[in-house]
Image (tube, rainbow, N blue to C red):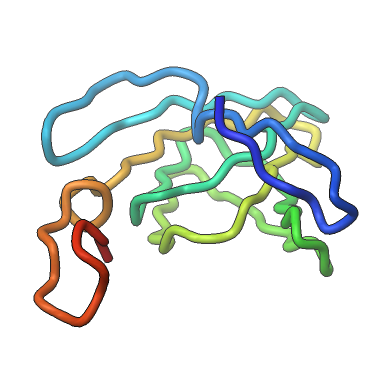
Length: 126
């Protein structure tokens, strides 16, 4: 399992970005995420750009491991958002309804992206 260091030096175990893979091929990976009120998706990091499709609405909170103000987001049923990979974070359902989504990782833009012809070290990916 992958680990990261919190700002205070504590080692944190990183979880997968979702709870269950419901589809995967060489181009995409689709995760199911279900959070009951008060539940959270543990610390994780997205390495691929991704879409989040809300199947059941909820009020969520995104906390970054690096600190700072949490982001409060209202996920509406049928809503779709695109996000770039990046910070290590945790998602918490702070509402009173169950949250359910499908997270679609775009592997061709992340882990399967072709190497760029730049001054990057050999084997580096964008």
